[in-house]
Image (cartoon, rainbow, N blue to C red):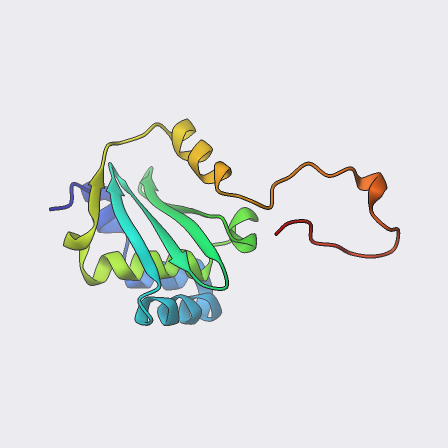
Length: 141
């Protein structure tokens, strides 16, 4: 059984996900949820972690802090602190059946951030002087 704190159980609702993501990303996240694209859902203290398979594999963390829902995702939207469709999919998966989440030992926020950052394959140092002038490039895999 899940040991998620009462705080997350109170805060993480379908309405909260819709409010944080907006209609567009909520609908996309609902599609990921319905396609069962969320894997390795785990409870970590007052948070959740999971992997979402989409155009690539993305790593999501949802947690409660000071009675507010927070999230990180390794997708481009998540890196820009946008509550993305992958976050919605993880939230909806947990809401549908919280008892399916595995329990993990709690990590410090520094350890969690390190785990998420290590999964960001596209975060590589680039010498901007080597890029052609006047063109936009996404550097990564």
